[in-house]
Structures are given as C-alpha cells and as structure tokens.
Length: 156
Image 1: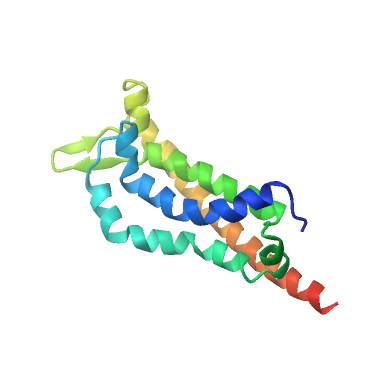
Image 2: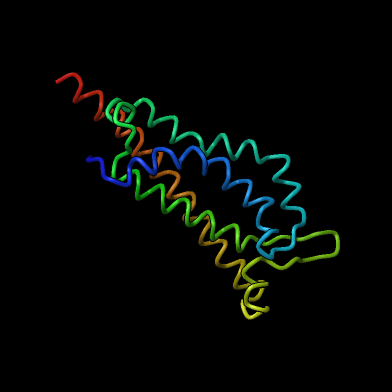
C-alpha cells in the first residue's frame, strides 16, 4: 500500500469534510435549491452522530505510523475517501424530504425544473446511500489494513 501525491490533500480534507458534508447534507442543501423539511430536523438531532461516524476512518489513519509521520494517506484510502465524498454530495442533492405539507423538491429536481422527478431522485439517492455505506466500509477496512501493515513493517 503506497502513498501518493493526493495523500497530503486527503490527510487534511478528511477532517474538514467529516464535519462539512453532514452539515451540507442536512442543512446546506437548502442553499443550492433544495427545500428543507423534516430531514433538517433529523440533522439537528443526529448530525453530530453522523459527524462522529465519519471521523472514524480519519482517526484510524492516526494509528498508521507511516501515514501519521508523513501526513500523507495511502492511495487506496485516497480513492475510497474521494468516492465517499462525491457520493455523499450526490446523496445530499437527491435526498427525499418532506414537510408538514407533503413532499418537497430536492436540489436536483429544482435544478432540472422538475425533469428529474421525485421517483428518479429517490432512486438516485437509494443507489447513493448504498455506495456511501460501501465506500465508508472500504475506508474503514483500508484504514485498519494500513495500521496492520504499518505495524508489521515497523517490526521488521
């Protein structure tokens, strides 16, 4: 598992985006055209939990000695992290939301003038949610693998 040039960016961005992505998902999407409803209330209640969960893999990288000393993450971790971030943004733009008056438009629905309807937006979000889970799992597994590899190379 080698370290690439993008590793320094990811090493720093992972901390910032672990906080900003949930904030954008629950509240900030209103700034790009989505109507906010109950999902923003859920964000106020559970947003901190999501932030703590997203901080898991970055914390793991601190236990990987080569990553910690060079402040540069490994290439596989970089790829998994970037996929996680991009899919998280896509999910924020397509998350179905509703208020007391019924269904509210997503940012994607607003941007396309309704051409991408509720069903399509929900389908895109469903795929994005699965990909978020897989990408998060990949970052976690790669982080643990980095720790194991870093410790085994330190013992040699």
